[in-house]
Image (cartoon, rainbow over all chains, first blue to last red; front, side, top):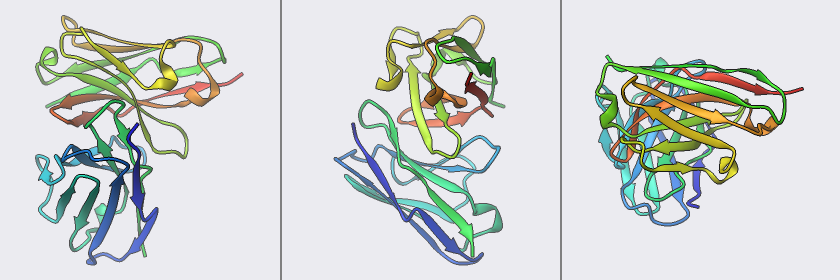
Length: 107
Length: 117
């Protein structure tokens, strides 16, 4: 099983700041990595797929990068609605796995 | 508009069975793989099972193999998850998910399954 390790577990920032979230895979997943945003009581939302492609309707302040085992989700100039939990997911091999999540909280 | 609406969650005793379902609309259901993903209280997301567009192949996380069964009815635009021999650790919100190529692009609001005596 491919293990995804996200860091940091919690990130405390203020609106307007830049957020950098990391996801590291235990073995190469090529570019088959996606990022999701999850708010309490809501359905998770796809942000990024294939490591760097923004999903439909996702603002340009969200960007993804990386390949192989190291990936980054960057949010430039945080908006109040961006504070949530973020998960990475690999679909390179079965079973599909998620990282444990990074909680982005308001400082 | 893509809509995925789960139903069938509830309280069940350990060792019991429950079937959760998902009604899909707003897209050609028979063209997409579908999955179930769950989130236990206070925990992260966990993939549970996936099924191909024609239902010919099914994939499961090891912890539910032999206990859970995913199925679909393309004529009725519905997805189901039959859960048997339920355990306390199966307690979670279960999400119905539409899959694309290497991604999960639409998620339902989820249905809560609680396994407790």
